[in-house]
Image (tube, rainbow, N blue to C red):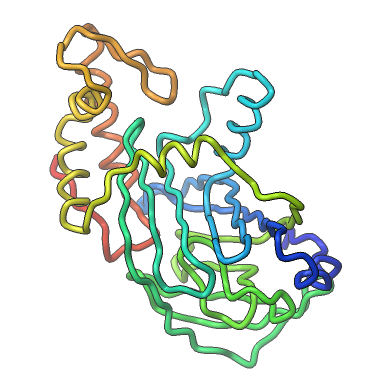
Length: 277
């Protein structure tokens, strides 16, 4: 494992309440479960007072670039990401699913029924304990650190007596691994996340699925309507820098539809949406 030394951080967790504790995870996953290729990203788990946020590191990098008047790279993944927030110790989560320049907000309760094992292992100065659960249509193995007094983990995983350090499913579709921790003296603000969270459209599970299917039916039209364009010859940009205009409408539309069908392997497999061809 690539986990860094965390012991010093653990010793001072209770000393400063106003601080933000940031845990950075390496996340490896298969966008397409039928292929062997692996996508790698970093995610932040920020814990401050009672609020917990989990989000892609690209939001942090993009915000830093803007603050320093630097250009944002085209490969930033704002357009394919989700932001998760919840109150520390709560089972309630708000998830902000970003479809290019549109954000949908879903609220849900999430609880894992963990089975604790006596099996342990030592990594650096941490003693990790094993736990297992079946959740979201997958079987999961977690290794948590009782020395780190947060009952949190990546994505919606929580409820163990210590921070989740390593997590993976039994089919190797997803793997989360803690690689770094930081202690921030000030509250961390991010204009990208705040913008999407403030502008998000609240939906229930049924409305969410309807919106995703409507988006899939014609992504370009969905996005055009979202930015207030009513004329088919008006141009606009995708978040990856693609200029959508009249002469590439069909090509862009089919590329987005194909990507949605192909990369349809969510963490919560029991909530997968079946898209028609």
